[in-house]
Image (spheres, rainbow, N blue to C red):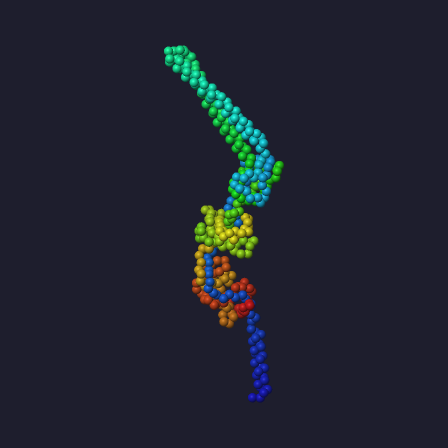
Length: 378
């Protein structure tokens, strides 16, 4: 064959190859996940953000209103149960206590005098009665007079002792009035906030009207997370289940949590999003480190798990349990699988996929549909 014909044939073949190469579709770069085995957990998470709370917290106010006379603590102080925190002006009530105490002392002295006179009158009546029995040395009328006088003195003695009891009760009432002006720590804790200054007037909140408490006291030695769980998921949760806590303030999860309480009622703050409040306590001291009441937090309660299951990322799953599988020609095929356990990040595959299959994670990209020509991102 002449060389010019061979050259022409090669030229035509090159043009054809170039044409088909140019006509080949441009591949779409996609993120790929290779199906593998691993642990899959079935979990339940909160629907709205939860909150870290102190196990004990009290918004304290004196039982009676008045002007702040003494403030014995400042914000951040550690206090003990029974410690005096704040005192409303109560000099008049303290004077009443002093007066009642003096009255008791006076009543004790008067009772002692009256009772001794009564004892003397009783002895006198006894002697006159003996004289009357012994040959009637005294008259019967005189004996009756002495006996009646002794009984009257005894009654006066009892009245004097009763008066002491009354004055002691009066003193107790005066002391109670003083105690109503004192703010005492009901438990060991930390003074979180003080909303009162010396000289200011404080008062308990009237019914139905919320006012700032003079002192906010909390026990931060014990913390828990309270979060709302959708009413549909709540029946699956039991106390004692393991739970993880995620906080916006920290990157790592804290997984020493245990479900400690499930509310016995459903919150209906929103008609279309009814929830059950679930509480999780963290037990590992490392997980409690740097944790503060008020932090926003999410909980993830572990229902069950499988240590070795075929799993895929939840972000790769489309509606009706469909995924896009990459075939040997780098073309996407749609495939339906049967799911098992699942959580926010992982789904178990019971059938429809096998270990080693490559599926697309970036299913939201334009053009990523069945039949598309794709290329794995590095």
